[in-house]
Length: 350
Image 1 (spheres, rainbow, N blue to C red):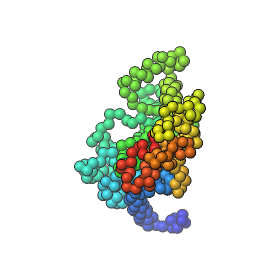
Image 2 (tube, rainbow, N blue to C red; image 1 turned 135 degrees about the horizontal axis):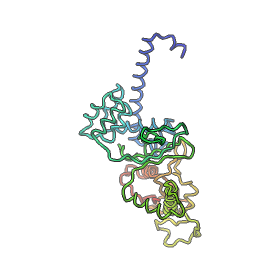
Image 3 (cartoon, one colour; image 1 turned 180 degrees about the vertical axis):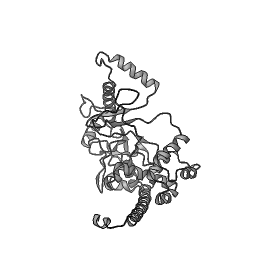
Image 4 (cartoon, helix red, strand yellow; image 1 turned 90 degrees about the horizontal axis):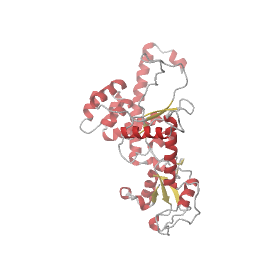
């Protein structure tokens, strides 16, 4: 191909570039439309994925950024179909659509689309900042950059902090909403081994609690290093959450020691929860056409034989399910009744 391309005249090369760009935009618009329909039908669930994000990254082998931008555009397209035409002819880009998405309403969509036509990312950010000023940035987690020569600022003889961007990852837990762009996850980007930068805006109460913790721990942490304090706090929080969710404990009671767990009780004994969680490795156990779901958040204890039809709360009858696949299996059991599916119909949330 390089030999063929090198033989093209400048005019022909530029013409081919423009034609290829048009084809790419057309293909992108078509892909976005297809993804919107796939999500509308929730076909990713039957394939064994707990979210459209998982389907795009694992089944379609998109990068995380590509998956996020296309799914977000697909959700906007389900509300405002005009974006497909604007995406195809270049008036809007995936980036522009993503920036506009959180602010779009039926009343302002036409004005925002018109104002953002053929605008760069920076110009679109300025437009949004003017119309919708934000007081604080969202919390972010990212790796520190690879060691290099420090960049000194004119104001101080200290290395300048790496520039902060505001990338967003699609939260795989927001697929139940036809269009949802408000839920965003903090970014974790490992650019340097085992070193991360945490930058977060906190409230006054949180700041007071942090200072109180630092004072109380001065004998153990003389320099009051925030990283050590946060690590201590998270260790306690994780231990408490694990105990609450699957009865994790250093001194477990023997099976059968729990009281009040009769054959028709919805309460799952702690020993059973621990065993199911360990067996399923804290991960959704649903297996689809492409393999097992990899979701580890919003997990529930799912009755294989429904509790409503006499299914017992035993290790053999329980598996972990993410919320999406628990609802999916309810749909298979009771077609057309997903909107009415109660949490306690066939599962117990952790």
